[in-house]
Image (cartoon, rainbow, N blue to C red; front, side, top):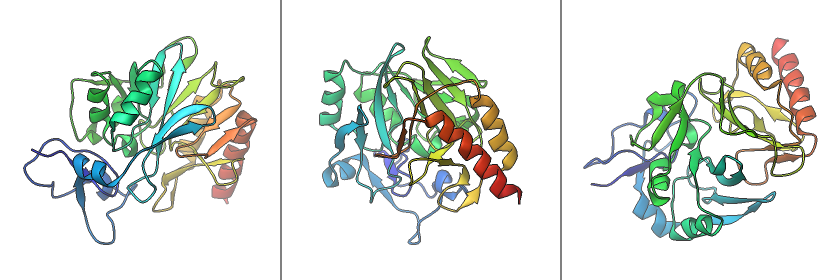
Length: 268
């Protein structure tokens, strides 16, 4: 039976004989059902239509689909002291992508920031030899394709090594996660926040939204809680959710200034 993919959010579902009637991820107010209604595709159909973009983004190997499909996030390979981490996932797996990862030493684990980027995470895990997928326990309900390769962590901090820490930021989703890499990829370290805080177009600030497509701002209390959870971490760079949406240099100061700017704006 086929594994259907939602064409709006890019999430792959478990095997069914017919497309699901609904996509709960898109029906949630943080996402949306397209103007033409719910539509579905399959991994095979996606592979026939698209090739993956595979290239460097600020020194890290990245993978992404064309911007006209679903959410245009890209995944990144992080060569850390916690092993090779595939940060985030996308909807399409290709032989070229798997070969590119194997040429860099393979992948030891997949880590994903929040449900909008779960996409074809199980497909990726299986293509890479059944590597574990780390998700926050608070977002377990959004998993659409169960797998024995899923690993759920809990709490606000999960240390993978001396230099790699997962931080529950919350706000966008209860389990929204940022990855802090103390040693890299450049001097001063980096923060990979998914959509918990999003690098904006000027590449000098971040912002905070409960729903990005529906323009629903994040609650000030959630932003303050995120600021406290991130306070102890230094970083020079912030790698955003998609190609080139990065703050390279001065990232800690940019995030601090952005917390103040946002809270001042929403406080009136």
